[in-house]
Length: 307
Length: 307
Ligand SMILES: [Zn+2]
Ligand SMILES: [Zn+2]
Image 1 (cartoon, helix red, strand yellow):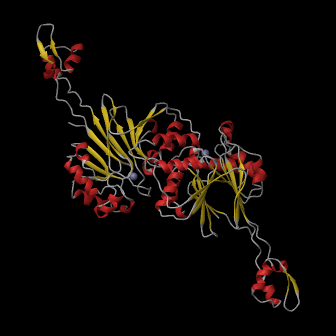
Image 2: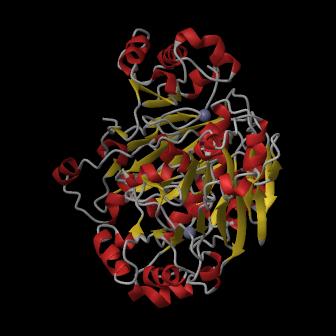
């Protein structure tokens, strides 16, 4: 998975950070791309990135503040102008559909593809063979959500050499062995498929959170995640300000990530007041959790496969 | 007047041209600023320009296509975030108000200032001592409008030397002379105020047109204008394409501007297919009307006072 941070600022765009937008590119899935939040000019940021608009087939909106939402109508229209035919599913709180439909209707925009709107609450909102998306409510000044992406565990590969040593030749039987079945061979031998499988590869777990105050439940929700992408709007000295406006400080988040045993924390949604002070930000947060990254616009983070 | 071309592209943003946005800055009016159209990321373009968002007090929308409209909610919210208190008036076709109010309501955006919406049709939509704004309907695939800004004529300055030669000293009487009154002086002499006034300075006339097919009525509407800012989406070879989608070719517009005796034509809303071919565009259009300018993003055009 590749994470393309399109907009890492908060509230209003600045010359150094755009408002929220993040694309996850699944390298193993024919470069399917999912967009998380769509602040104004997200499509402009995509123009500066390797992301292809027509390949985005799911969009997830964490909450309805303008800096996470107002780029949606324009992005949808441009996806159409580029000739996209494949349907698009948009997951978000109640209200996304009304906003998008009003914008498209008033501007007489007729799209070249279908949109499905799915109103989110808690629980699993998407699942296929390879990945599942789960939602948890957060603590902001309006309903706001975190998404957990959990890959399916990958079955261990066949121990082909071992099979061939025993004279078991490739054929339909290999599929049954792969399922871990117990099988009677033509010569009467009985084998346990599991003995011919390498260890399962555990699926990766990534949590992408919307705007929120620090939340105790985030610790269990992101327990042992490979990656937690979380807002960190303010530094510790603005703690009461953060609390008032429903945001987190960077050290509060680092402490949560530490207690959740997260492999990697990336902070985004950074207040523009810290422009030029990125190093101090990173220093402050790393005093709590070493290795934490403060995202910047157009940053790409590659998440390795589990071994 | 200064014209700040924020976005000069058409339909969708590209790396070289943003979608429509144009600010007129009135240098003589305490740098009042008016915005014409507000495509997505107009506020981002403002960040790269000398324009101050809080000083924009009127916004004019030519038509409701997304590339002229979708930047409005974000720009309004940022104007509020910057602490603007002065009211804002938005002129545009029916639908602007619904779009803006839906966006603000759903995103729970509470602005720090009042907005007045004025639905436009034909005729004069604004007038004060120094300027008047008039609207004409155009010929697009949806209702689209042109705005004509006409400055009030400026009264000629007093011929102070001539007055002093005649022994007429400064005082309230100068105000009456300025009005062109006929006045009896204390010593019985009768003077005609008009004889002590320099010639009137004619107000400037500027037409800013939305998307349209070439329109015969534009000739009278922009007759002798100092400046005509008009779309020129396509070159002549795409004439039937332009016709189909309600647009003009650059030479069609040049021909109109010529017949209207316009001092300066500036073309905008340029199709992204001409990226890199700006010189050829200018060559083609100047073969019809010399001096025509093809606008580019962040271009500033200063319109001189009439002499
Ligand atoms: Zn936000
Ligand atoms: Zn347009």
